[in-house]
Length: 268
Image (cartoon, rainbow, N blue to C red; front, side):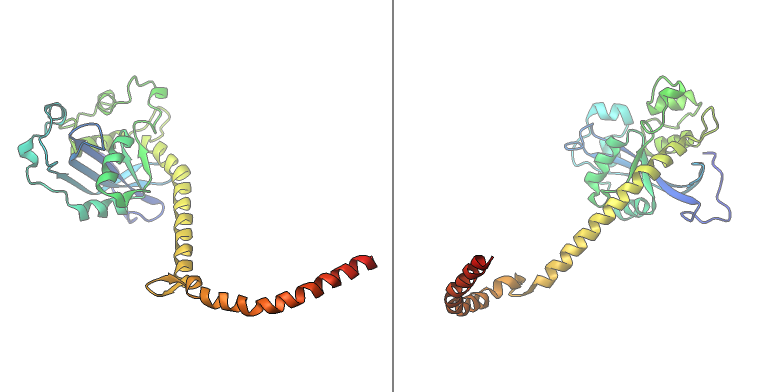
């Protein structure tokens, strides 16, 4: 992949950001019943002002045993067979580390990859995803198809293996590193979406976290004794006793106060 390497600036420091391209290969199309058999993540640095992809920071690709035979139709697409994944597991710590370092995640047809990744790793829910298929106006630029393999062919990019995690991720980044007819980097369209939509997402998440924090602190103040029983329940007998003690005085004072109000009404 031809990208400009980072020199003096450190990844993640302004004006540089980090994003991660994610690609999954699966046993089928339904994230509720099908399973991931391969996961690839490429963490990369980009220029926040121009959207130029600068350098690959780190990457990970792992196979995963789905616990069932891989359908022949799926193998015909990605070429992954049962014997390739038998007994294999993803490195969860490494996956979460790479995702955690990214400002946002990118995938081609992100709704598909996102559903599978969030099912495997619920911890990443709330992370902003940008779609390189829908987030770049390919058809407005004159491309007949938004499918990754077609876009790669249109730009003269030849992947080593189509529909394999690491190769698709690397090829997609090579595509996003290119410029349109106006000299704008394709990836800048996704950065723009992240900055406009992701900021609202993060501020909403922060407000939600603050609300949860306030609720937790309030609950902690009211739950002290009896295995967390609320104080108002514990003090209910004392409140009832106080009401009973006040009742005779209220019965005596009520006719007097009523008569007083009657006199005031007549005086008006």
